[in-house]
View 1 (cartoon, rainbow, N blue to C red):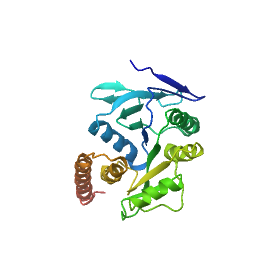
View 2 (cartoon, rainbow, N blue to C red; view 1 turned 90 degrees about the vertical axis):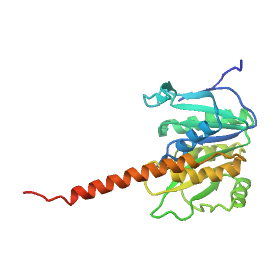
View 3 (cartoon, rainbow, N blue to C red; view 1 turned 180 degrees about the horizontal axis):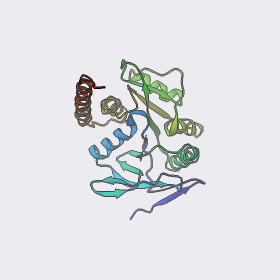
View 4 (cartoon, one colour; view 1 turned 45 degrees about the vertical axis):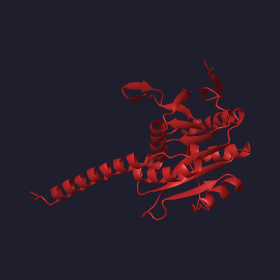
Length: 239
């Protein structure tokens, strides 16, 4: 039996197995829910094992249902050479700094190779699909080799941005992949585009087709809703 190791800071604690020399992914629900959608796809397609969780009294009162079973809302998964921190809620700002330090301490103890985070950019029209940013020249060059557009300026909010800066201070390479989204609502199609880039970075062959099908279903429902609303607006008004 593998021992569970606790990494504790003031606001929270990580209870997890140690996994050495892995690439670490972070998936949390920012705009478009890109990280969260990607995380669940990876769990299913790579048959990832749940190896731990993060806990805090500052988390929202929440349990996540998965196949009818209640699970922790912030879990840690692993498969061959990959570890993923997956949250089903937006991490409160007052917890982000200390939690990030705990995650980076866990990475440093386990000699993690790098961290890859996910975020999104709200645009009027999708043009380039996926863009990137990094915390080191090495990581920036790697993104450039993938022919990814690089975001030259801006802010990276939330857990994904803080992880980049805190890991940089520890000398751990980090990258952030940005999906283009048109609204804050779930965008599986944008997540599928990020997955295609992530496959190249990880050397995996995760099938993004389930996300495309999900996107088509959402788009179909939105079109039906729009037609319904339009039909109602064309109904005669009575005073």
